[in-house]
Image (cartoon, rainbow, N blue to C red; front, side, top):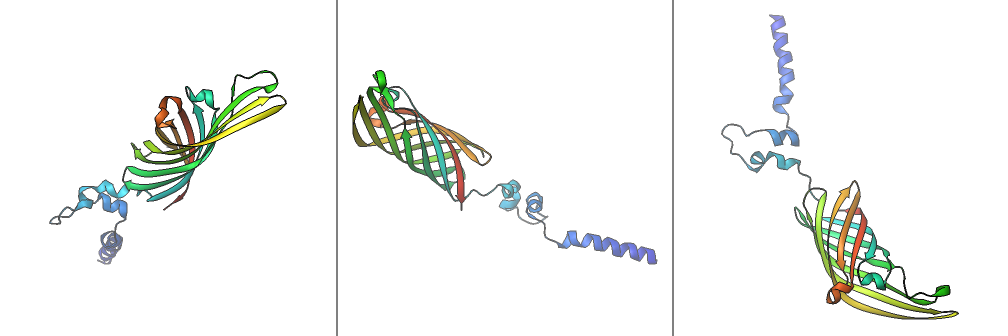
Length: 217
């Protein structure tokens, strides 16, 4: 009789925590509603509890390489730059974006002669872009951007031993479309851009970027 009582006490002690304790999130997500209990949103969609919550605000930076295309390739060399980026989550798959920065371009020699004589052209750019980023999966996304391009053109004429230069600054409306993917902490992207929508065929380029998010909220 004493052995039977001991077995009952031990069984009750083992069953007590499972019956009285609260399940964790993963357990709640898999637990079906008891008889007579209405099936709420958590019961009808148990997997929703496992979906991570996207950050509301992201601040980061993109290092970029710009390759001019077509006519623009005759007027400037390749460029490198740094863009500051802000993102705001508008809905589960959509972020609003803003990027501002500077793209410095190398010179393109036009009709070069001996001893460096010739005309050297370049076009730097200060982009101010607003856009949207749509996530196809957790790691892949597409995006569009539009805004202003502050284009700083320079033409340098070198006639040994003298040289002269002319500079101009123009404010143009531009746009771009691209795609990206996350590789660990890095945000990789490539886009086709038009720096001046009024002269689209003369201002096309490919922009390749590597981004890093350094603040989330």
